[in-house]
Length: 445
Length: 149
Image 1: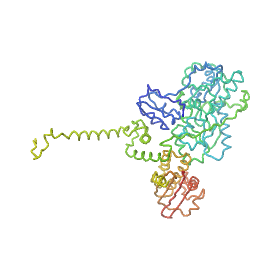
Image 2: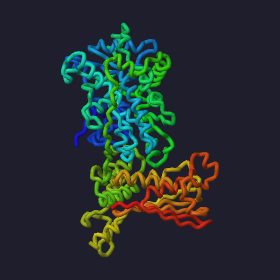
Image 3: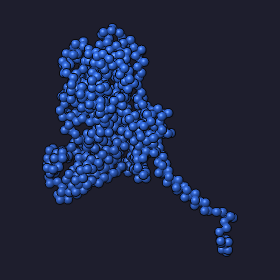
Image 4: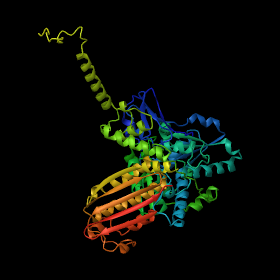
């Protein structure tokens, strides 16, 4: 199977240290031949390794602004978290004008799509009583995490397209109407806060090709955005503050108006909550808003501002922006009907740990258990696997050797040294002056 | 065929985890451990989920009600068996204990969010077979079986 991954390794910069393997939430990285190797079938593109790498050897694949030239008409989509990257006195209308000045024909806030999705989430929530808690599908890294590590929870995900997708199809429709161009000549560019969104575009979870054509990193264009900050273009602001609130943790719950919700951010925190659900707890919670990045999308690794600062800015904006006319009226003024949010198909994609065949898996698990008793249990990572248990599993499936453990290797070398020493003590009788011959008349000194 | 059956009978994975009464700090650890083993065995996600829920409820029952006990997991190619055995007060009335919402957990434990009277009913829902034996004043043994083939 082919997987597209936005999280990549720059081999030149990788020193083969253990920082990334220890942080990966799905244990998808091993150090081999002095370099970190990502196991493609496991990686969820959360970007934790990019955050963890002190050598900046991990990076997120994305497109270039130069691709604007490939299309006749271009539209930029900005994530709600973009507003958190500027100071309090920089208005959304100025930021959007600065984005447009990068060379786009139009700009739209994904916050508008977030408002549409918020309503769809509320409707889905009301129509589906049988299963609790329901889990938001807003964060693509969390959706992939559930697919590979919590496959039994796939049914809990609210299977709705993301605000980015909804905004993209809205804007393509509008651009076709206004320009008369063929849809493929219109380029929809998303300014992304994270690598998971890049993957969501290049390899969508539901398999339906994305409406987004290119994904740019906020960090790549930020310098030019600052230079472009001049006039406001108020006509570009179309979203209400509730949609903008999606840019930080808790925003979706506030916009969807779900009372009994649990909000969790940071991928390792998300895992601890999903573990609880898998043990049958949390059935008394209605909705889980889970985001892989600390603080929500403002904590995305392709953003530039400190996530706490960005979070405060976004909250101020949501607090201070005046409320707008209802969504349906704004969409009507915009010239598009209220779109129906498409459902997506989220399939389980469980990691194969030891073997597909139960009998062989049982034998390998026994081997893992035996290895665990021999390995030191320090989880040092020097073998290239994140934990002793991961090494034991790698050994059981034939991907590693027991002597990859430096402590086991040391034991072997010690045993070998002892053996060498013992052998060195054995001298052939012809040379052995201490050896007593028949009668015991040795030349003892 | 008999030989295969015998062989498959021999092939089993066993794991026993001790559980201490009132050790709320480690609540869920045994169930998590069992879940990881079942994941390593690559069992179907829904089987893992049902077994994990049962293991968690069984573990919590020991922690809430008993002095000490253990969870014993046995996986064969045919079935997954989980036996929770404890030394504790035992169950006075098993039929009553099987009813949803019935609980003998003291108030302080209910205040912690446990002891909602869903433990045994949840286990019954998750299992293909559930057997309880209990002697008042001595302890309880709960066995659940989930068929694999």
